Image (cartoon, rainbow, N blue to C red; front, side):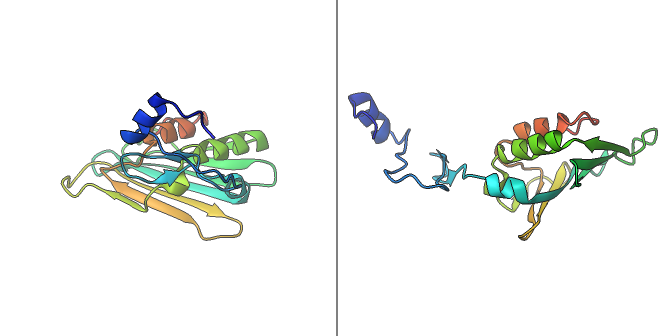
Length: 172
């Protein structure tokens, strides 16, 4: 229980904070958005361990699409980066990830709160621009899929940093 003060009461009145409750469970949310009123940040350990693949594309009509596919292997994973067709001088790049690199990558993904993302992020006011698609596959459940057109989920920049830490060409 928090120490109740005038400052705490003022923050509650302004709806700057939300109490999480008095019962702590293994899968309680760790965060709350005061703007959209949504709880997020659930424990993702089971999802991380069950993750077997990652497929991501980002680009647009004029510049082409970057794509990154990562498949879990017995020891680590294999990452394949494919550059946009407009970058004719560059070939696809394959990189072996160690088990530690794979686990760090997957953990980083879930620290971007991907399970809490909406399925679609679409800005109908823009016809051309940037489109993206993401699919994460698992051992024992349906894939997690989401996409967007000129609109991005929360923690998007953090998500791109996680991808770009792999040592492959940056996707932006």
